[in-house]
Amino acid sequence: MENIKAFLASRRASTILYVALFFAFSWLSYGAYVRFDLSSTGAMRISSTTKKLLRNLPERATIELFVSNDLPDEAVLVSRKARDFVTEYVSASRGRVKLTILDPDNDKSAAERAKSLGVQQLDIAVRGSKKAQAQAIYFGLGISYGSKSEPLNNLISLYEQHDLENQLTAKIFKMVKPNEKKIAILASHGNFSLKKEQNPNSLSVFADKISAFYGDILEINTTTQDIPVEVSTLIIVQPGKLEPIDKFRIDQFVMRGGNLIVAASGMEINFSQQFMAAPGNPDLVEFLKRYGIDLATDMVNEPKPNYFIPFVQPINNFQMEKLPYPPWVIVPRDNLSQNNLASKGNAAFIMPYTSSVKINPTILPTGDGAGKFKIDILAKSTADAWAQANFAFLDPAKMGEMLAAPKQNTGTHNLALMIQGKFPSQFATGELPKEAPKTFLKAAEKDSRILVVGTPYALSNMMLILTQMTGAPLLEENLKLFFSAIDIMHGNEDLVELRKKSSPRIKAKLVEEGTRKFFTLLAFVAPLLGIGVFGSYRLMKRKNQTLVNENTNSAKPTEA
Image (tube, rainbow, N blue to C red; front, side):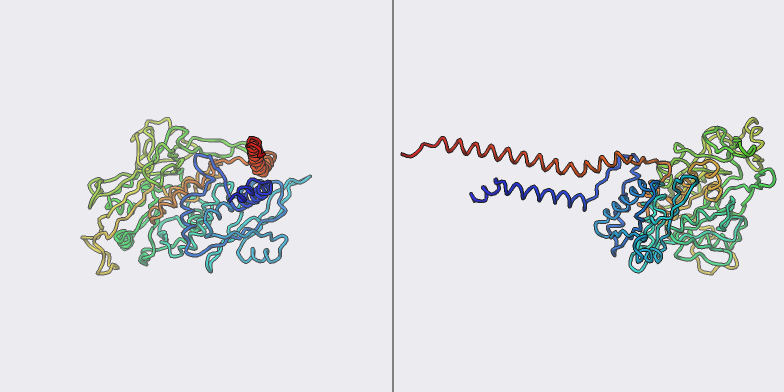
C-alpha cells in the first residue's frame, strides 16, 4: 500500500495523468457535441419531437452528407453552421442514425452515390472581378432507412430559413410511417385545383408542401366514388355545386370519424367585373348549416392599415403605389386563439376575401360528455371590422370611397373555427340519394374535427402572390396553421412543435470569422490550461508533502 501511495505522489504518476487527461479531453471534444441556443423560440435547438422519433426508430438510419471541399467564401460560414446542425441532429439520435460525410468533387464513387440518391449540385453566386459568377457545389444529403431513401437538397437555404430540422424529420417520418393516414381533396368541384399555375385559384404550392410530409394528396370526386378508408382528412375548397350523393358520401366520411378542412367563402368574386362579390356556394352553405356551422354570405373588411395588406401596383417603370385594401384581412397574434395548438403562437393568419363564420349552439352545444362539442374560434376580426352582406364591389381603385362610406355590420366577426365532437348525420332521417347504399351509418362512430376557414384564398397560390408582393412570409404563416391542424387531426400533436419552429421571421446572426477563430483557439487552449492548473496544484501538493516528510524526519531523535 505504501508503494502505491509513493507512486501516486511521484513525478512519473503526474506525467502519466497529464497525458491521460490530455487525450481524454481530446476524445471528448471530438466525440461529444455541445451547442447552446439562447433564443426564446429555440429555433436552433433539436426539438423533443425529433429526439423522440429518432431514438425510437425500429431500424437504424443513415445520413450521407455530400459536401464540396472547395466552397466559395460566400457559403463557408453558413455551410459550416448547417453541417454542425446535421452533426448535432445525428448525435441526438443516440446511435440510431449514422452520419457519413463525403466529397463528391474528389471522390468519383461519392459522386455516383449522390446521383443515385438524387442529391443535386447547388449553384452559388460568387463575387467576380467584373460580373457575377456562379459556382456549382455539393451541399445536400441522402437519408437511407431500410430499403428506402430520400434526398434533401439545398441545405444552406433550409438552414437559413430554420427549416432544416423540420425537413429532415419529415423525410424520416415519411419513411418510418409509410402507411400514415392520407389526405384527400375534393376534386372536380369548383374552380380551384392542384394545377401548377401561379394564379389565385391554384392550390399547387399547398399541395407540394404537404406532400413532402404526408405523401401525395389524393384527388377524390365524391360524385363518382366513395372516400377511401385510408383517408383521415378531406379538404374542401370553394366547391360550387354539391350533388346529394356528394353530401351523402362526405357525411358518411364524417360519421366514421373523418376530419374536414373547409376553406370557402359564402361569396364568389368576379375579378373581371370590378372585383364584384356576390352570394355563392349555396350547397356548401346548406351542408355546413346542418352541422351547426353558418358560413355567412358576406365579405369582412378591416379599416386600419395594420390589419390589412395593401394593394401594390406599378405607377411607372420605377415607382410602385400602395393602395389601402381592407378585403385582404390580416389576423394578428392577439386575435388568434392561444388555446388551440393550430393557431397558438402564430404571428398572423392572412385571410383575403373572407366571410364570417358562426355557430348554432342548438346543434352544437359545448361542454363535456355525450352530445357535447369542443369549439375553438381560431381567428377573429377586430371590433372595427365591418361585413358587407350579399353584394360588394372590391375594386382596389375605389377603396377610398368604400372606407369613407358609412359602415354597417361593424364589430368582431369570427373568421375561422375548429369543432370537435360527434356530429349528427344529415341522412339519419329523410330521403337518401338514389346512388346511396341501403346500409349506412346513421350516427357518428367516432369524434371528428371540422376546421372552417372563411376564405379559399388562405391556402391558395394567392398567398404566394401576396408574399412576393410584400416580401413578408405570409404563405409560411398560413401553412403553419393548416399543417398544424392536420397534425392534430392525425393525432400527431407532437409534430406541431416543429411547425412552430420553422419560421423565416427568426433571424440568426452568424459568428464573425475572427470571433470564431478566437473561440476555436479557446476550445483548444482551455483544456491545456485546465491540465496546467491541475498540474501546478499537484506539484505544490507534492512539494508540501516533501517538506512535511523532511520536517518529520528531522524532528525524530537520532540513535546513539
